Length: 135
Image (cartoon, rainbow, N blue to C red):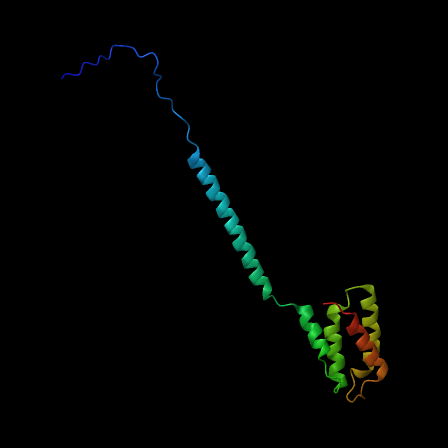
């Protein structure tokens, strides 16, 4: 049989194919970009957390050393208390006054060859200053 279809007959009810815009690739790229940005943000925050977790805290270390000062050697203890206490003197005006009062009492134990043991008044000022510190 021969193909009897004629191409000269116009078709009235069938419309030509329309081109449909397909944006799914762009949606996919946007989603991938957002996921990558979020993933990089989470990785950056995890990196900062890990890095800061092991960060050295000078205030906590000086507070620990200040609490461990040995009062058996008053001259060395006076220098150590002065050095470690200086970290906390600028916390507030009250801390500064307490630090200066403590320094006045510690002066008699510095700059001398032989010194006597701490008196109770000096120990009281040292303990008062240590009690004020917030780390």
